[in-house]
Amino acid sequence: IPAYWSSFPSSLLRVAKIRSWNALQRSAALCQVEADDAEVRVLPTMNGGTHGDNRGYHALHELAVIVPGDSSDDQLGAAVRSAICHCRST
Image (cartoon, rainbow, N blue to C red; front, side):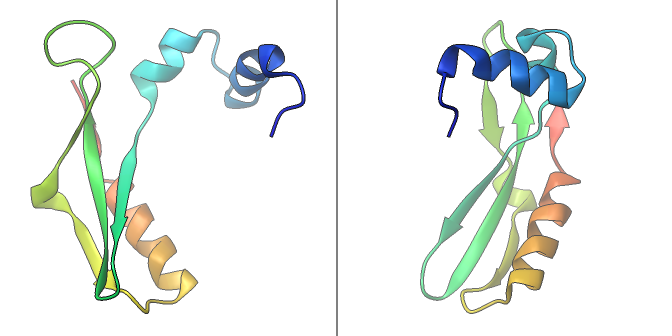
């Protein structure tokens, strides 16, 4: 957790090698993770951008990657990497 939140955005942009927060949002990928005892679902999303009726992230339920609830860390990591490959931008 950053000690000084005001410096956090600029530090993140520097590490990401991106010049603006808007550019970061346009290029970002997001996966949502839902879990219960039976399974873990990793949902890729479509990035609708920062403006317009379709702005924000929208889950792509039909492309969910599902693994058993007792999956290993390696299996969970593979599920997230697979789901990220299905993320889209408009």
